[in-house]
Amino acid sequence: MCPSLRDLLDAPERARSLPPEAMAEVLGELVLLLARLLVQTTVTPSTSQTEQPEALDRLLSAVEVATVLGVRVPRVYEIIRQHRLPTVRVGKYLRVRPSDLRTWIDDQREEAVDAKIHPSLGSPLPMSRPNMKGPGKQSR
Image (cartoon, rainbow, N blue to C red; front, top):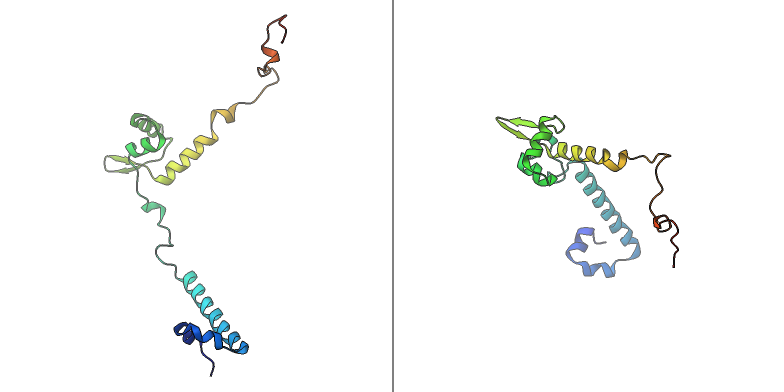
């Protein structure tokens, strides 16, 4: 009688005595076991693999937002008053979702000063060494 996969797991040294035709049967069992494991993990994901809904993100205070942005707290409240950063009201407190803060930061990157600069035809040439010499000055 040929040992099963379970027998080989219990006594791995028996694998040396397996005939080649029996090895195919054991490998078939192993493939079936692997397929069952894959189906089981994709159908019922564990709680560690599931993402929490966005609504349950930990909300950030103005102080935490200021820390993330590297600005003072009054600046955060100014941005909120201008309705540029969405907030959630919890009683008398204003809180910011981390996802809203990420979106706001990304929007600021797109509206950066460098993105608005367009060279025009009348722009002066960049300063280089030959252009920096005064009239009549010779290079050495």
